[in-house]
Length: 244
View 1 (cartoon, rainbow, N blue to C red):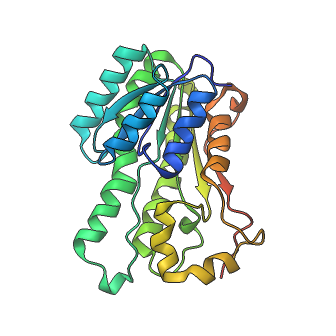
View 2 (view 1 turned 90 degrees about the vertical axis):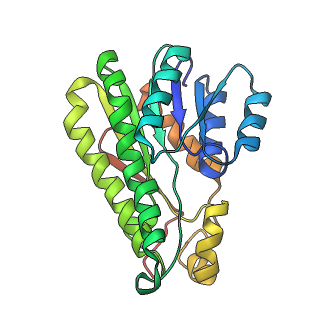
């Protein structure tokens, strides 16, 4: 489905990002594998799929580093057909007790990061007259649990960014999507479960956690030409997650 495509995935060394990177590679894409701290995991993926992954160590909060990575990947791969803004952090805390550092870090990684990445990759896509930007949101954007005020705000911003970019660049052949996962079985979810484990499962009619691979399958479709008439949309994959 992605044969010949060149796609970058941020935060790709674990969790949903890792699943998306693997799924894209298996679908035929060459994948830029971004990581910031989990170098060992990223290198293990590269070693297992030598012809499919290009390692891109950078911090999405660093605009210059993002721009350098865009140039590096384009030089090696020839073009950039898709960019997945997956890197994110969740530091649960009630707003009154959240430290300024926790607040700032979530805003910088979860919201400013996708903005900086989109700003860096858009010139390449404009030159190509094609491309897909896929942003990772969260069910917290509309149905947060306790302790998610800041995280929810950043994900709401990501969804607004998705719609705005779709309007600005659709006429140039660029599509922009967001995926809104519910509770997915990843390390990131563990911090939320510590606050409200019983509450989370009680909200899921399917009564199980989602799997990263299920999110990855949706991502591959949205990155492919089969989704050619879809843009500006937020795609929910949450097992029917309901408001508590």
